[in-house]
Image 1 (cartoon, rainbow, N blue to C red):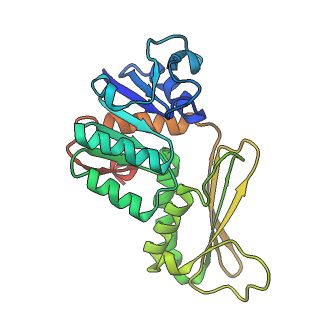
Image 2: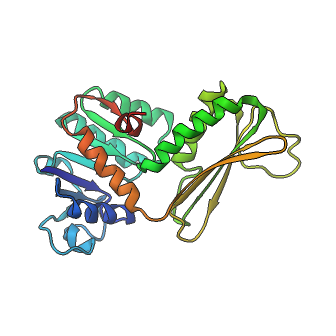
Length: 266
């Protein structure tokens, strides 16, 4: 059995992960964490997730519980992720990171930590999304500069970063496939007299509202036709299942950076 810790266990995704671990025959909940001062510190993580007491009290001190888990799953915020990764690197504990909103400097720090332990990083743990990335790459290479490319994403009203980490990853895939520089060619919203669309533009549109779990569409708009590749998540369970697959993949791996493309062999 692989002992799993869940960071951010009191959040929507954290509770879903605790429930999914309970249903897995290969995994067991070893520890659960929230930030210092959280109102649920000391509560039972299983009871909070609606699966009954599991004897795992929610703590704010990952290092004190370092011997209680083999892999930690982290869906929190960038600052917390870096702190957790530093601890995991010191102790050689593997980590599955689904946190979004990481900037280039923060990703660089994670790369340094990955020299000492196994880090599995994906802004979206959905198998379907990661298959979509491959389809998007194929379409972009086939269609090239003959089409205009737009990325449209929608999430629930509580999401704090925009565009989503998945949308930004899509942008990176598009830029690499089309030979463009995302920093120079990305447009994150339009207003007023913007002028004609640039030939190399990669446009991003963001929607926030209600309880939308996550939707991403890439539009390849040409003369006389339009191709759209869309992925829609109906619940957080698909992200949880992807994260659990990542736990099984990264457990026992040597130090390094891993992602869903590695897991899926894409």
